[in-house]
Length: 248
Image (cartoon, rainbow, N blue to C red; front, side, top):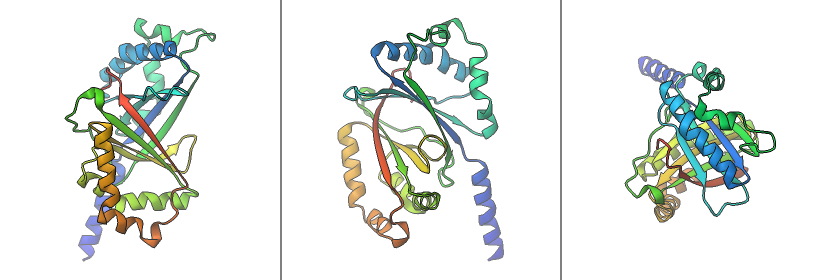
């Protein structure tokens, strides 16, 4: 029994040590001109630069066209270790090629975005690395759903993460939600908070999956447990689609 406990502790410690860190950059855009400028920078310079640095599977996503009040581009980057992220932005911008100069040297009167924010996350211990979605539908119809769950206190946040690790992520897997990542926000404007991304072949496909989730016995049991009540104070759902130059 003691050996089993020690083996379990060792396994959990190793899993914690091997967890990915995620960086999400959000470009807030006022118009099409800004979108085209950021697109050109990411497509022609930023992603190729990251690929040369050994960083693959970079996700670039946009809000749906009907969201015109705050058009946004989301950039998802994963890191195996904290050290790889520590000086990442400085290393990328150190040698900007000609293809990136229009963005970097933009005039203050015509900036490439109205605001940029960065969110840093640490992967859940039960889902320590990201996963590429296995979608079969037409790329143009795909829906990427980014969810953000804020909690009233740090303790409630840890409770919600525990809820995910105690069966919620398994349920997503069983029902085929094609999850990309799960992570706790460790730096960002909204904390305490967790975020995760699921993907679907279409909006209709997404709706069917969530109907199945809501009706599932495992979810009804888990969500009804007294110890998991009141652990989310605000939930945001953001529907995205992949940019044509996104890696996934």
